[in-house]
Amino acid sequence: PAATSTALEQSYTPSTLRRPIVAGNWKLNPSTKSEARTLLKLLASNFLNHRDKLSSPSSPEVVIFPPLPYMSDAVQILEGTGIMIGAQNSGSQEKGAYTGEVAPSMLASAGCSHVLLGHSERRTIYGETDSDINARLHKCLEQPSLKVILCIGETLQEYESGMLAQVVDAQLRGGLEGVSPHALLQDRVIIAYEPVWAIGTGLVATPEQAQAAHLAIRDTMKAMYGEYSGVAETVRIQYGGSVTPDSIAELMGEADVDGALVGGASLNADSFTRIFDGATSADATKKMGMISYLPRELVAMEVLATKNALGESPVWSKKNRSLYWVSATEGEVWTWDLQNAPYRRLMNTAVGCIGLLRSNAPGSIIIAGESAMMTTSMVSTGGNPNNPIADFESGPSFLCHRPDHMTTTRPNDGRVDRFGNFVVGMYNQYHRSGASEGENNAGLYRLNSQTLEWQEILDYKFRVSNCICFSGDGKTMYFGDTPTRCVYAFDYSPDGPLTNRRLVWTMPSEMPGGPDGAQVDSTGKLWIAVTGAGRIVQINPETGVVEMVVYVDANPTSLTFGGDNLDEMFITTRAPNGGGLHRLKMPHGVRGLPEPEFGVGSSSNTSSSGFRGYLSTL
Image 1: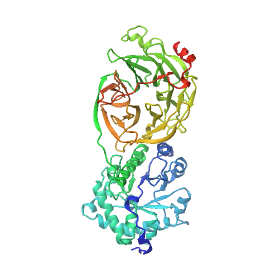
Image 2 (image 1 turned 60 degrees about the vertical axis):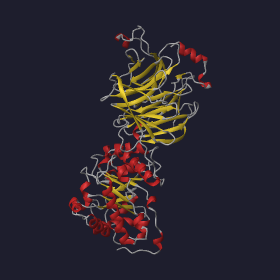
Image 3 (image 1 turned 90 degrees about the horizontal axis):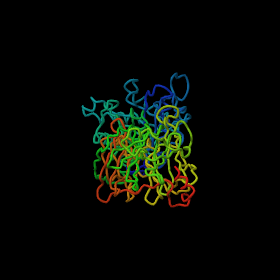
Image 4 (image 1 turned 60 degrees about the horizontal axis):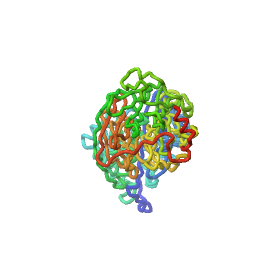
């Protein structure tokens, strides 16, 4: 056994200070460098500007273990994200005639921070013994910049025979032979408990089983290094074995589970990011004793079977007592007065979002089209909203060009701010595959209602703009990049850029989908459509707590408040299992705010009579 040290017996670290670590083992995946680069780009976009503060002790460490041919790409693409790079194995020799081997010094010089040793596949397929693993571990520890994740775990037969404690005890003693307590107290070695029977099988140890195994590991560490050395309490222990976004929070809720070694789920950037988020929230709950609240639950019903391919951007005109929304990819703008049949107009271009427009013509709106900003009146010139010819009547009028003029982007989400300007966020049309896969190339812009000039108002790029909405006083704007599953609040002024970003909500790891359109109610609460999850959530922006949930039997995309008293919620949805308009009467005291009109704001930059005169001619 390793020797104990009297001086180090005073180095006890409380378990609550162990920093979680989430690691992704890619194994022999993916098949090509191109696929690997795409995965790395998507992962980088999920973390950069959103989860890149990984140096904070309150945030889990993140490591990925790609195959060696992809390591240089990983180092390059993940630079600045906070994600560390590891190797899946290492040799026990420093240099010489050892064909096929890789020395720890080579890995360290290539940008590696961690080495994975003792994985069950190395033990069972390649016959690596505890002695082999121990030799490699010592060679890795000679490199000051390298940490080792030492994998241990029992087979199903060993588990069913009640041999868990004996197996992990033998593997720990063999793997850590000669390793000093100082190295362990300095966090040079992390233990990954991976029950062999759960790896790649879809089976997962229950949280209670994982906790029992991790306690057995700590008992062995106490026996090896002394009960009062602090080693057993300091060493971090990950769980590995078919970890998913749905299982991570419960696993991390156990006192002695300090992270996860993720296999198959790490090959999907969104799944791996969700696991990181689950580890983050569960660890915060564990450390701070945070209370989980049960939100109030409501259900919205479909009222119009419009079969929109991608319903979006609902806005309610109190003046016209009408709802307007779009079917984005079909280039349709719809309106409904809650009494007669809905009416649509074809724009002959994809439409990202719309806003109300101040004009003498009833039903006037501003439209963010794929190529230009347009205006139109959602009133049939034939005077009969049920006349099908009206779909092909006079088209929209050109207002100004759209921002950025890139073929890889188009307008997506947007709203008129409380000062009468139009804020529009762009969308990377190929963010998952194609010309700009994984790239943050979309910007957030404001169209000045007096000059019709665009101003970029966010100091970083993103992929999919959503959640754009404003507080009642107009001084706070909400925004999210959907693939990141994070929603932020910013200080907002009609003349300058967004400032003072703060995180409002990160989606729970077990919740599928992503944040889409959003709206603020009269009490300042934030309502977010979670597409892919069949629900709208009400968030308290001060606490991040979900206080109400509206379930939708479809894929919701956005929402707004309407009706005479603004106490009804209207929800757009998308195909394939949706596309209709849903409606809900809100509980007493919950209502929306009047939707502002483009060009009507109270600030001086929207008061030009010349511009209002121009609008009146449209």
